[in-house]
Length: 404
Image (cartoon, rainbow, N blue to C red; front, side, top):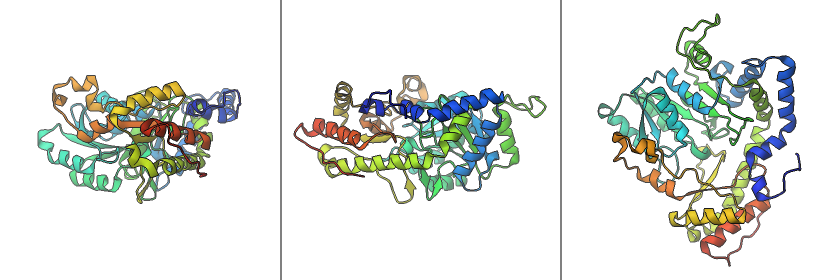
């Protein structure tokens, strides 16, 4: 790794920087590969990465099921279009998510129908989805449910798939923050009718810029897969004739080679994230009640990939913690300070004026993101935990180092 970056928690917490330095040789080789080949658009890099990504996802997926696109938001949009979502159709989506999920719905011309998240976890509440599906006569025609695996936590995919099947709606997985998460032993992104992955530079599998992957589920036949591939490239067929609706959203060749080089190490990088999460847990959980914090907690049927390590704190203390962290070199952050139905553009619309989703609203006021990436060292985690505890229960508290 390049050692020009100062050795500090703040620099090590900068994942795009550290990841780029770590993979500098891969990045340089990828650029050289494209320059020497002259293949710049949907060539061997994208083809090989689609093959490798399908193999990595596992199950019955093949390269034909994986379609490299410009970014994760495009992948969501194309998933909805492939699912037959049309203007004014309804799409159920958790309100506590990155706004990009909702932006994709709006770009299709569909209507977001906001569901609440679980009381203790930041994932869509199955019972709220069922409540909305039972009100279908009162709502825009519901075509799809988007299950967002926020922060790397897995939704209850089995229950959602059964519910969607029973009501005849499409299940789309938003895996933008969950590359490496598994549910019942299978990778997320393999349970739904469609899935969308993001390779934004902060993600677990990160491009040097934008990138995304549309995954057509194992039930998607050849016609659906071919339509999805045409859709990313103007709707052209092999004769470069537009035979359907299309956009311009292609995974870049350089990014594809970079991602392919990183994919080989992804299991080890996810394991490193999980070890860091375990260290946070060991240092914070024994005093979590005293501190008044909530910690992420896995369940037996799914495994976290820890794109983000997000805790909850007293909402009255969060802003003070952020300011003290900024002053003391502790890079806390917030994902997200508003649930999507609270964003001004959405909230001013009449149909959302009186919408109240208590769990989403409470979490948006209390979530706090701690530094998380595979390049952090044990001392960083101890420093973060000490800082957090000292400002929550007083400077006399201490943290005992535990080796993970």
